[in-house]
Amino acid sequence: MQRYKRKIALGLKFIKESHKNPIALAWDYYTLKRKKGLMFNEYYSYCFDQQSDLFRNTFLGRNEQRLYLDYLNPKKYYTLARNKYFTHLLLEEYSIPKAKLYCYYSPEGRYSDRGRTSYDLQSTIAILKKENVCTCVIKATEDSHGNNVFAVKNIEYADNDAALTLLDNTTVKLSNVLGKAALVFEEIIYQSAQFDKFNKTSVNTVRFMTCLYPNGEAKVIATFIKIGRDGAFVDNAGSGGNVDAGVEVSSGEIYNPIIFKGFRDTVSIEKHPDSKEQLANVIIENWDKICAEVCRFQQSMPFVKAVGWDIAITDGGPKVIEMNDFWDTTGQLFIGKGWREEIRECYLEWKKYNAEHNISYPFERQNNLLAEPKLRKIVEYEFK
Image (cartoon, rainbow, N blue to C red):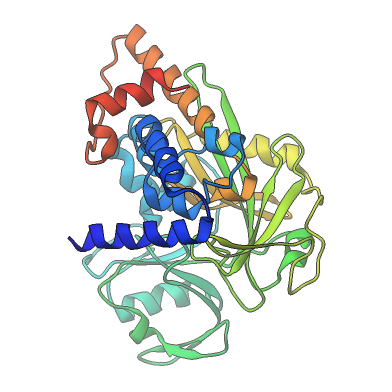
């Protein structure tokens, strides 16, 4: 009952804000829901009543995205992209550049033959001392969207503990950081001079969406840049309060920079509001080489055929911060159009290939709107 009350309240708020005929709005939303499983909060958040036909037609909502990505990125591989420790091991295996892993803290463990796994305070201190770690980034292994990420700019070791000085100059004891949640301790990545100018305190990243096709080819299908604000360490776009912009896949040109305060609350800008560095129409250096490298990353990961990569641009080339097998939809707002057709094309090519080669590839996690056979048929075969 509470869910329906919230929907009604949101609907009334939307009608008041849009100043449009309520019946026309309801019909427009119903049409998009029937055709592509659009949720009402997506219709509201992305201002569909004001968007261009290009955005409306190409937008990929979470329900439809789940249909495609459940197939392209099967559930059995879920943890390889979501668990930061497993991702480290995987990237190392394929020689994909990333931050160095100093230590994996797992309170449930008791033994490791790799020398990087700790399970209590003393074993963690021993590994960090052995690696001569004075600065690092600490991340929860299962969190995303920039949650539970701490930048440590200095470590002072004592006999039974260590004092961590964070980026904001606060100090915490290592014993208070360690708990029941698994953590990874990584090296701090230093970005290129160009990206450092955008905002010095955060590692500013480019989100690359890539697809792998049955012929072995990998393509970059969409890109946008995420830039933090002064004093912030993470550049996360999902929670708002930072700077984002589209990046032309073909040229690396930054366009449509905005301050993203939240959905339905964006401000168009030309320069970064804090550093005053120009963003609009700036070309990202060495763009072609970076794209080629990211395509190589995708070709090395055939078990996930569509990946959202968070990439730091360094003087030595691109480094992976994180890989996502199911990413949020927010970036479509930054680039001004969706990536529906590209994901859908990849999906249909793999469906055709697997059918021709008699490869069983069952649909999984049928727990959303598109699990309804009629709607799945509309999305998969009929809607163009």
